[in-house]
Length: 101
Image (cartoon, rainbow, N blue to C red; front, side, top):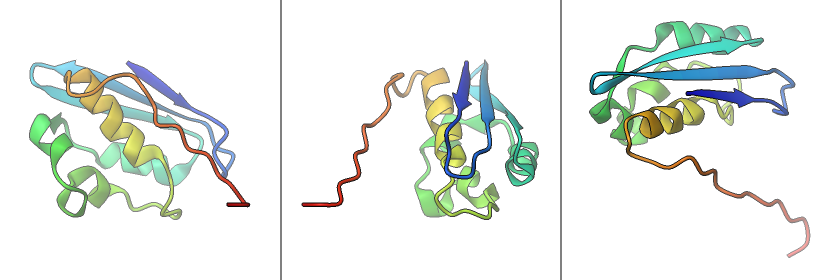
């Protein structure tokens, strides 16, 4: 499966490719952002345990040495891996910013 990420605040386009290998997932990242490319190169093949590990101990977030703490790419990696492993659905959350509340 390929996930294409565009319209990020940084302006970079990225692709996250998740391929199931037995009971694990190999992630490949293609990105205009150098930090995101390096992040992708450091990712190991992910098991279901890796994918479902809580954020403070999660290998994906530990490898995400990115300039912007709100970069969505680590989340996309985990979401794509979950989908490939049959642990989640292809549906995104809806986020709405409201100035007046």
